[in-house]
Image (cartoon, rainbow, N blue to C red; front, side, top):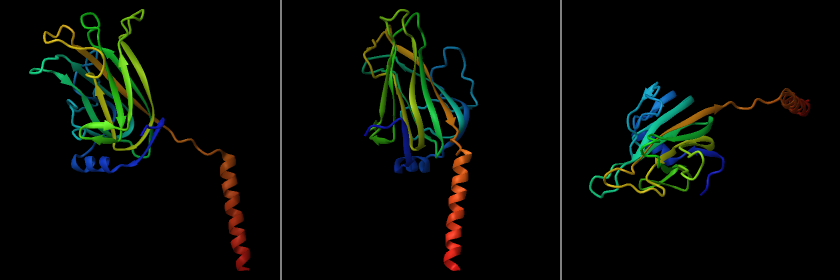
Length: 225
């Protein structure tokens, strides 16, 4: 199943189960994931929730207004014994509100380790601990670009509903890491969610509805007479 631009999601059974098992955190403003700090410095936290980790039920967010979630991920080591691979997974409940979602990413160490790629996945269904049937958005640095691309922005469209699953995965992609960490990938991300106000009905439509209601009342009155 591919999502449309607007994820018209009802209260999914998965989302309900996650929310019941883990009390959701009600948030708006700046939310810090607590992983790799932003390139510009510390996260401007209104809510500091610590590392999201791989468990989608660990962090469940109920949005009440415009929100920016700040985070960071790393793919540091490709050895089988000491691999340090950090994925940020979480769940969000938006209710009946609609939010415009924009995902931004940037390399943490542009001079020493410019390689960084991965994907953000948005969906509503899990198979084990993997999102299935959602939308995958890939990001990567551009060493052949001039100047070299070390950041980017992805439009995730308009989102709504409950039980929405998000995964930022720096392990996905073409870049491999080495045990001496000379090629490790470290990057930061932010997800900006801006509430879209419902479009009010024009005055002409309201007058039409009132008129139709009046006609209906007159017809019922006529039948009684």
